[in-house]
Image (tube, rainbow, N blue to C red; front, top):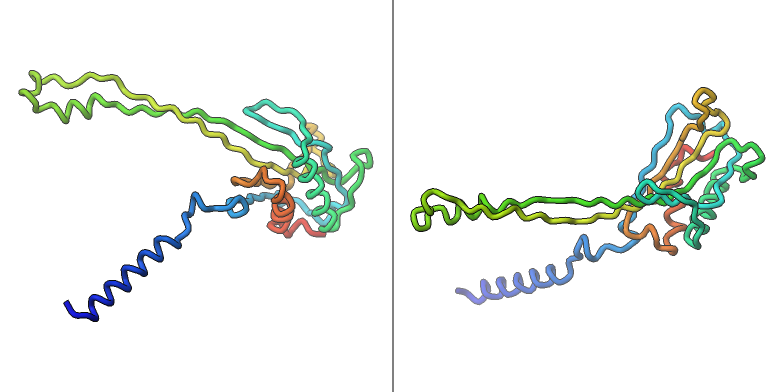
Length: 210
């Protein structure tokens, strides 16, 4: 083996080691901010230019596995304040709920817990593996019971909705949702990211601007 080839192999080894040590793990090294995901939807039939005033709820609705209650923690206050500031920066006027606002803003924290059950049948595996041992025990397989594995997953996210107070559905006596936003990710309960989260959902919805 020539000296040049040895040198090339040595440099290649150092390069591979460097790449391995410096590469960022896409899962374990992701920051709270990098994990945030924003999903926005709107009613395409709505004319947002006709809405001028808005009001907002005084608390956040906590929905936990279909059970709900109003809450107002520090992070909830920061979220509501961020929503007010962003609506005002878009040209809307903040008014009291008693002043007949054109739209209303609601905020909810949705948390759902799911229990998953998976079954791993061992009898067919062990029967096939040991089927030929000792003549297969007269053709009998193994009848061990299936193994069940339980896992619990909790999914949480913010849900922001805009209700059309100006054009209520008088037939069903409801207010139509003309815009909503979901905020998902590891950092949704990080108070330092509330300002970024509230501004991002509106930045992703330029049609709301007056």
